[in-house]
Amino acid sequence: MSALAVLARRELALAWGRGGGPLLALGFYGAMTTMLPLAAGPAPARLAAVAAGVAWVGLALASLLSLERLFERDFEDGALDLLALGPLPLEAVCAVKCLAQWLTTGAPLALAAPLAAIALGASPKAAPLIAASAALGGLAFAFVGGTGAARALASRRGGVLIAVIVLPLLIPPVIFGGAAAQAFADGLPWLTGFALLAAYALAAVALTPFAMAGACRNALS
Amino acid sequence: MITSLHIQSLTLQRGERVLFRDFTLTLAAGEAVALTGPNGAGKTSLLRAVAGFIRPAAGRVRFEGAAGEIEAEEARRGGCHLVGHQDGLKGARTAREELGFQARWMGGSPEGAAERFGLARLLNLEVRKLSAGQRRRLALARLIATPRALWLLDEPLAPLDTASRALMGEVMTEHLAAGGLMLAAVHDPLPIAARTVEIGG
Image (cartoon, rainbow over all chains, first blue to last red; front, side, top):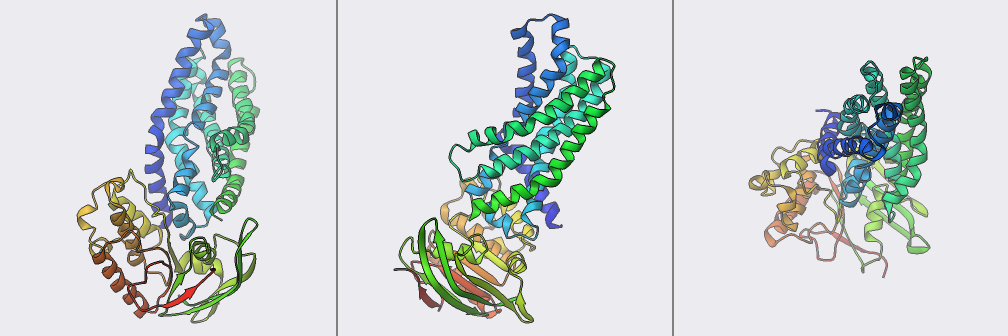
């Protein structure tokens, strides 16, 4: 088995078990969408107006939940030393970690997002767009969030630091994804928002592994 | 394969504090060095500097192979084991999964390593259920599961019992006989003949 496959298997197994894995994020997301009508009132017109927006805010917050431990465990128990001395560069290791995080929380959330939006009154016709954009958004959240998690290594109150670093960077995908879904609901051209979201996600995948690897090296020294 | 390690006029600094200055050491194939010194003298930092984790304030670390100098990054990725205070094992996974991952990730195979270290009957247990000595043996098993020339060991024997120390002595002797190199930070003497180098103090 190649080193990449060995690492991917380990990271998927760890991400699946980390803090409840997909169940925690899905539970949080489900709770948020069921509580909104209770808090804001059940009037269908009001809920339908905010359905896409709420689905996106929920996605962003739910994908942050288990990020804190993405690098922290490996750092604390010494496994990060081992990962740094393996055959793949640390940049690749970081990318694999974030992809595993995305597959175990981002992808299940992307399947749940259309359900949540429809439950809140969005049109079922919007479901494919919402699922696709949630999958892209989740990819951006995993990589940008991973950068925050790596940066917060070896610092006290890392969780607070992650929120401060990461939240501003999560805003663009929320705007692009929310705008695409809203435009679709209003019968307007939605491709621009979707394309910007895709560009943001791909830029995050291409660039953040370098920042993560730098932050890990810094923490190891 | 690494045939010699050259630490040249190395100065290490942690924050404002200088750990040691102008430390020079050459280690050739088949040779073992026991690093001694009081707590906080910089033994762990020296090992981590050789592994490339800590950037020295001055001096350098070079690796040489049969065909001349090996680029440091390549030497570390392909020829270097670091077993530190922390075993790098995940408590929630089984010993088999962890040993399998560590061995295959470094490019080896876990076959036989567990038996050699007397771990065969423990492989199905979660790592958190192992004792400190058993965990350390599991971490040390990757040394033979994945042959690499340079072993950097940080207090490798501290939690081990007498029998395991004797076993590690055998494993170390075989490694050196096969042309390996070993740099170990220790307080107790190593179970094999080794040159002692004191740092700090």
